[in-house]
Structure formats: structure tokens, C-alpha cells
Image (cartoon, rainbow, N blue to C red; front, side, top):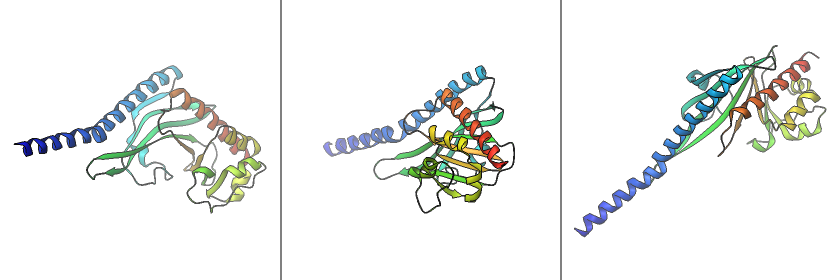
Amino acid sequence: MTVVLVVAGIVVLYVLLNVLTFVLPRTFVKKRQAAKNAERERFAAEAGWRFDASVPELTTRYPVPPFTEHGDRRVAFGVLSGVQEGVPFTAFDFRMRTGVRTGLLWSEETEVHTVFALRLPVPIPPLRLFAVASQKFADQPAPRTADPEFNKRYLIEDGDPAVVNRLFTPAATRLMVENDIGNLSVRGGELVCTASKVFAKTSAREIAERVRVLAMVVHAITRGGQR
């Protein structure tokens, strides 16, 4: 009888631990998604923007990290779209599961990135810049613009360095550095920027401010492309 009770206790403990490490975190993620959606829907109504709770096709639209990295259970939610500083934009959170640990305890690892995509008014060749601190491999060339601080902070992962140097005028590089803009790509007629927060959520007002800054970057590099 004692052995049966011990075994039963172990089973109950195992179930409870898995609830703590697997079920509750997933519940928390869903509640946070609902809270973000509610906040952004209210903000969109005030700003005259469009809000969508989820747009599945956005999870495969952009051929840049983090979309090209390993992960499943992909969701694009809290989608805001409109026009800022004369530039059409879409901003949303992209979440994916990056790993599952099974062992004695089940648990999931997830990443959430806030994505900003702004429509370019003129064609610009594909390119990708990475903040040096977030770059896995530092063997890519650095820009050689007129801004030495910008040149120290970024690497060119993709694109013609000569084009990057022409597009990123002092106005553009100043905006990038002062506003700590990290990963930035140009693909399919859009400027795409991603950012991630490990614990804090990105508020709707923070999204609006980031979109405003990125719209100014779009104008600056557009002028650079016309030189």
C-alpha cells in the first residue's frame, strides 16, 4: 500500500510540474496576446488605423530573419496598418515556438518579435543591415558612410556596399543611431525592421513612435537613392 501511495504521489507531482512548465506558460502567452490585441484595437480606432487580430499570411511574407529561422506554431497577431508621415505601413507581433524540451518535464521556448514593414515610394535594391551586437558572424563588410558611428554599429549582411553607402545619407544614419534601430531589410518594395523584447510587451504607442521614425528613415534613404 505504501509503495502504491508513493508511486501515486510521484505521478501527481509529475503532472503538477508539467502543468507549471508547459500548460501555464502557454496560457500566459495566449492571455498576453489577447491583451495586446485589445490595446491595439483601441489605439487603432483612435488613430484611424486598421486593426486585425491575426493575419496568417504575414508569417510567410518576408524572406528575412526571424521568418527564415527554425520554429513552428507561427502566429502574426495584433496587426496595425495605416499611413504615417505619408508612408503606408503594417506593424504586428510575430511569435513562433523555437524549441520543446521533453525529458522529465515538458516545456516550450518561444520568441516574439515586433515587425514593422513600410512601403517604399521608389524601387531600392535588396539589402540587409544588422546591428553588430546582434550579428552571429562578424565577417560581413561594414558600411563606409559619412557617419563613423553608424559604420561602427552596423554590418552589411546582404546587398551592395556601394548602394548602402549611397542610400544611407547623414540624415538616415543619424535616425538609425539615435533611435537604436537594429535589424533592417529592404525586400519586395518594403523596408522591414524587427525588434524583440524578452519580458516587456511593445505598447501600441511605442509601435506608433517606431513607425514614425522608420517613415522618416524611408524618406531619407529614398532621397539618398535619388542622388
